[in-house]
Image 1 (tube, one colour):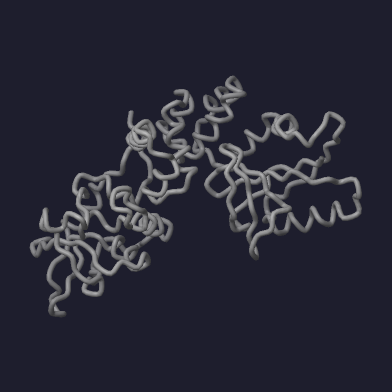
Image 2 (cartoon, rainbow, N blue to C red):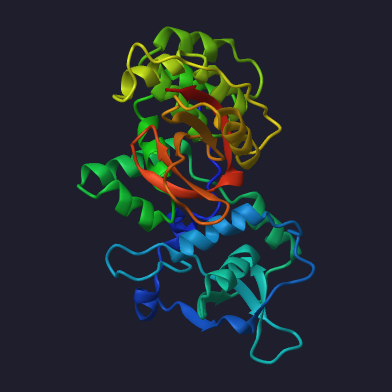
Length: 331
């Protein structure tokens, strides 16, 4: 059974997308100034997901490993001559790419002309546009890693964060009961599967029971709660050299309705008078489903903070509003 993944923006992997600006003369692809392209007001697609557009923007800005230049649009837009504006084009297919190209700052974009396309062609093009399967993406990334390409370079080439590469590369090694969550449509998130896969290394029986009991769509928050219950605090005590067996653990009630900044105020008020406090270990959950430690002593710009991911130890400055506190441990 196939496992579909939502990868809007990776148009470069479709068969019709194997065209780049460096091959413009070779394959006869036409390029024109972006200002000459206009959206069709009668387009079947009227709703545009901002997140999906941003995925496209990142893919256009991704660096080609051979040329060292931004990848740009690899799948030409299908257009027809504009009925009212001389020298301009009306889009048959590719309105999302046009919007993303404008945000990405592209000056020219590839296209081909089809003056015979009707309204049904536009709908059919969207209905039959297949997304890459999770397995396909995972195998692709695995091949690149085996060829010696660094995961950070793969991420840059795809216009994705480093966590994206680690999640998909982990998919190949996952137990079947974890993969079945996607196959049975209980989740479409590879990040959720990856988190369960990492927890499975130390708690295989618990993770298996958890997965096999699921009978309806599961959320990232539910998975985070489950993983946090797997002796998370005990694991942190073993992994943090600064902690000793004589350290005392003090719990703080976590309010899901509060954001990180509000919780930060609570922590400060709670511990201001506590002279024995060395540093609380704050575990947060990012919007893409990864656990990390909030580095509270590391300075960051306004409304941002530094976090250290548990899965690979990398650090990142991130908007605090994108974090959710899931546990706090006092040294």
